[in-house]
Length: 464
Image (tube, rainbow, N blue to C red):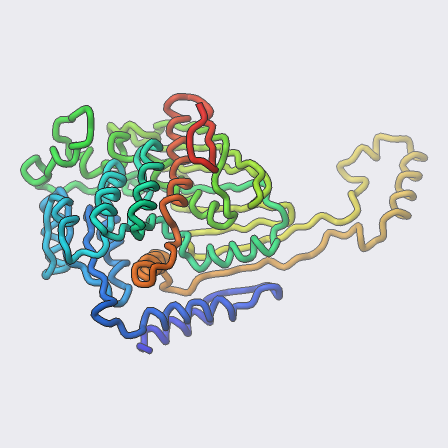
């Protein structure tokens, strides 16, 4: 084992903090060690996986780096519509081929898998073509731009039997896996609500990304970028380099960030999704020509199913929050709350359990009754409930933190590559990905059309 890997294992043993007698670090430590040992096994020529990335923006470069942390993975080609990003890809990976036509990537016989990290409006189109060309597909979230695309994409995956994984890394996080284990063990009692949010306070966090000095129709394949659009726009650098701000190409706060939150919630609870969605929001600060809100909140109702009781989810994203950069998912039960933070960095479980006795006095109607009546009630209460049953149980918190340097994204790609090599199911397939994406896109429908949206989570269709 390499020195770095040994150091990582040592860090894991010391950095995972578990401060409850009910939770032991051994299982988690053994799990990460198995992953590392599996990843370090000798890779034969037949095990090598050759990948290509389509869309070399922020996520394209980050996904490529994460994929290449998996032993035996080789990058052979990249595609982007801006010449400067192809130049940058060649600077970092001199031996690759580059193109601005994704079809050339899909036609290559030496490409085993593609990473699709384009603007959202191209995800489904390219994924379907890639699966039909026999490629394994890693599709950035959300896997679709429109709800109407989802069932067809699932159908193509089932017909082709292609390896298809959606890129929302929380599902591969060791912290989310441990949180799910404790949730299933009943550590917070019965779930009744979830509060999840992203707060940002910067221009970059609000998607005002840097635009290159040479951006122009000469350096950007603009016609190809909007080839699928019914309404063609004149070239606009903002629309190309800051596409998340435009409904024509992106899915706004809901598709970009709500989907991360719902992915984690669905994974932990095994939920298939909600039945009722309502969203509000507004464009309050970043009035730069975008046509999506910079603040959005949603209330989403989950029905009772065999997987879980009924519960309510509150989602919020604020791009001009005085709280600063912060994200949190709080899964609230009858006896505690799981508070997850970061992108799979860790969590705290705070437990609170009601005493057996219901309580009497204090903020109660007792003091409004005649004194004799109060005495009778207190005597009867004392006879019915012991002193112990009147005490609030004292329960220790559980704290879990992933080791320094841990990356859920790297694990997500390790899982994807393992599925390619072994044929085992991916951790986030098309059905799961669509069940996470569709309610988020329904939040956009609710916001833009000022209505409550009803959804069938089992069969995955809108109820009109």
